[in-house]
Amino acid sequence: MTYTYEHPHPAVTVDVAVFTIVAGRLAVVLVRRAAWPHAGKWALPGGFVDIDESLKRAAWRELREETGLKAGYLEQLGAFGRPDRDPRERVITVVYIALAAADRIELRAGSDAKDARLFFLDELPELAFDHARILQLAAERLRDRLDTEAIARRLMPVCFTLTELQQACEAVAGAPIDKRNFRKRLDALEVVEPTGEERRDGPHRPARLYRVKR
Amino acid sequence: MTYTYEHPHPAVTVDVAVFTIVAGRLAVVLVRRAAWPHAGKWALPGGFVDIDESLKRAAWRELREETGLKAGYLEQLGAFGRPDRDPRERVITVVYIALAAADRIELRAGSDAKDARLFFLDELPELAFDHARILQLAAERLRDRLDTEAIARRLMPVCFTLTELQQACEAVAGAPIDKRNFRKRLDALEVVEPTGEERRDGPHRPARLYRVKR
DNA sequence: GCAAAAGTGTTTGAGGTACACCCATGC
DNA sequence: GCATGGGTGTACCTCAAACACTTTTGC
Image 1 (tube, rainbow over the protein chains, first blue to last red):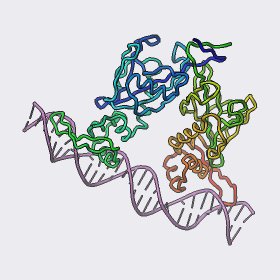
Image 2: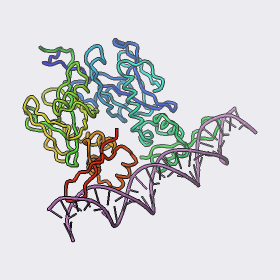
Image 3: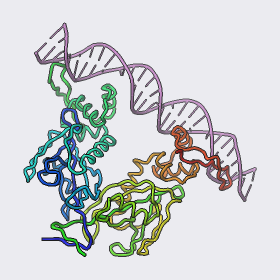
């Protein structure tokens, strides 16, 4: 089956940058490419948009296929379409940013047996296509737009300590935050509440566990 | 000449929302459609992306064709691609926002003799496709991102009064601003300077003219 | 007892907000 | 002289930033 047009048409893909927090650091899901071009390099999960499928729906499909996520936060970063970004044909990609708690991500090897894993954002491998540039812009977007509440709601697991939340905020902002100021502001925000539980994980005072308020 | 692919490909267009300030109000350039679909309705200027042309270059081309603008501010708003947004075929559009002083915009009738004119953003006519939704998102983007300096640099003519600049800021923000607070903040910003000239235009004290600092 | 992370308040400065009157002109 | 928009200063309040010590545990 072939499809014919009077004018040349580009191919359109969606790519998804799935961010999460691992060990207090920002991490992103990448898949290893098996085929040309850029075989062996790592890339954002993505694929072609079906002809009768919305862009967002295509992004959800890719997200689910690679990470098992069926709900959560997904927003468009933008369209990238330099004519030379893919040697096969003209490909315009629409990039989405997804946010999820690390414990909800179930990485799946794709149908073509490619690897999928999390990388720290500051320890990225060599990336295929223009994905390094795209991830740089995505990280800037997170820094500009994600506030403490969004981080607590979208990137943290159900239960977390205030230190973990602070580390997540520091990872997103890329700068250290004063502990007392952070907790004072968090208190005023009224977005988290203590669960009553504690976590003991070392030779020091146990940390109270918190959850996001409904 | 025809072009054939193994999988169906969508068409890709760029549309440009050109904003300016007219009489202290936000205005946008629209063109009247001559042909089906939505013949007679008004739409954002735009057109198909050439197969070897970047998205931004296509946006510049459309901008120049409709308004004569060759320089200025142009940023991507995002991609819009619901499958049913165009009845002809699957069309994904990448929308750009342009900002310009009203006195630099030279509206041109397109090659197919369509009308082009400025509309106040709060007095829009019926719009083609999903352009009403797109303009709503574009206006939100302006409200969120444009600060006083950006308005002075990108939307105002070379010479302007402080009242005109304040009206522009109020138009973008959609809310009234206190005159003394506005001028105090503007003074601290150090982005405008008096030209030394004045403008007399009515039965009242003349207004000092300002320009943006280099 | 000591190493390690958890938890806890006050002070200061900057910036934003509210608010009312005189000035220069055209008619 | 009066109607019209141009131009000016102060008081208050909120929020962000700087800053150090005590608490509780495991070993």
